[in-house]
Image (cartoon, rainbow, N blue to C red):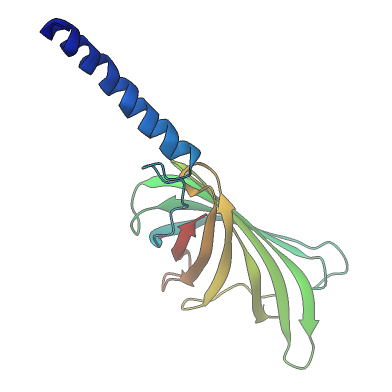
Length: 176
C-alpha cells in the first residue's frame, strides 16, 4: 500500500470513528450534552406601579364571597424606571372571619415581561374590604411561565412600598 492510500484511509476512518463514538454515546445515554433541567436558583426583582384598581361587587353591597378586585400594574426593573411590561391580578374574596373581621382572597397574578410571562397564585388576608397599606407583604407560589420562564417554580414575595402605589416583587425560582 502506498503512502497516499494510507493517508486516505486514515482520513476516511477518523470521521467515521468520531461519528460512531457520538452515536454510541447518544444511544447509551452518555452523550456529552445533558438534557438535565436548569436547577440553578434565579432571582428576578421587579417594581410595579398601580395603574388601575377596580372592585367588582357581585352580590349584596359590602364585601362578601365572590367579590373581585382587579388590578393592573406597569412593571419596571427599578423603582420609577422605564416600563418593561404589565401585570394583571385578580383577587376573589373566598372567606370571611367575622371574629377577626378579616377576609381571605384567592389571588392570581400574571406578569407580561419582555422574554415571556410568569404566573403566580396564593391567598392573602386583609381587614374586611380593605386594600393593602404601605409595608404590607405577602408570598405567592410561582406556577410557571412562558418563554424564558417556562417551567419556573418557586416563590414570589410582594411588598407595598411607602408611597402606597408601588410594589417590589422578588421572585426566587428554578426552571424545571
